[in-house]
Amino acid sequence: MEIEDMEQYLEEQYDIMDVCLLAGKIMLESGAETYRVEDTMMRIAKNYGIKESHSYVTPTGIMFSIETEEPTKTKLIRISDRTTDLNKVVLVNSTSRRIANGELDVPQAYRILKRIDKDDETYSLGTRIAAAAIASGCFLMMFQGSWADFIPAMIIGGLGFATVVYIHDLVLIKFFSEFMAALVVGLLAAGAVLTGLGQELDKIIIGSVMPLVPGLLITNAVRDLIAGHFISGLSKGAEAFLTAFAIGSGIAVVVTLL
Image (cartoon, rainbow, N blue to C red; front, side, top):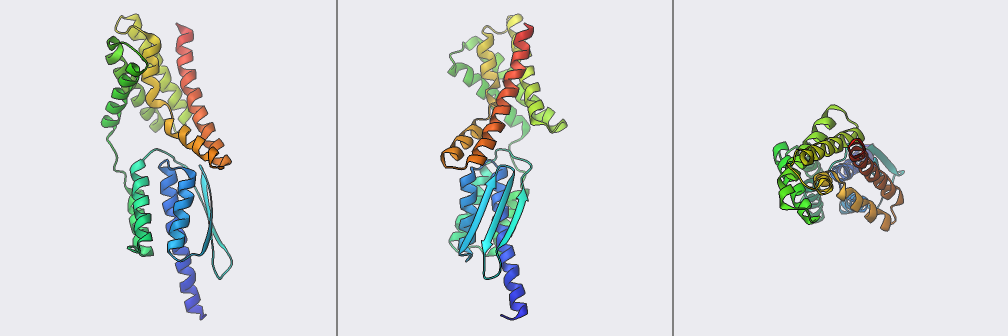
């Protein structure tokens, strides 16, 4: 192989690797399961002609390598921020399927994934707070609360969710923002009961903290453990435990003071 052809060949391999890593990064940051991230990356590589590839994904990093005629190429990227955005997961899956159907070449796929990665379009803060408030009221009823506590639980749940978003913007420590949100929920619930606006303190607190509970994280942790991804499963489980501990600590402080 001529030198120029070799350089072009190597450049194409690195481009494919960048597409795979970008797809994996978006999915992992958006809350996708570990096995889905690995599977998507390897499928993209295979559809672009890479006969053999390997991926190792944890909640905080992705390691990906491809086997070519040259020595194995490996890249590592770090994942710092994680949230839940299932729309981005769906968009990356859709892009992967278009690659499998031969509709996108490497540059086109990279541009689409870049657009998905930079897209900050999501529900407004007001909409998310309203959704958290409605969920709090519904959870209260699900736990056999009374209709008299429905409105207080909605208001307190919405304020608790707003607190965790606001404090997390100021202090990038998730445990602290969740602890403060639980503290606010506990104080407001106690205040509602003491002033006669609410009736059952425990039901109001349970309904109001439910939007803070990491349900998706717990589900993914169990799924990863069952699938044999022990490091990812344990890491996600530890993260979920810290969130549960923060919520429990905040409520415990209020209950102790009563």
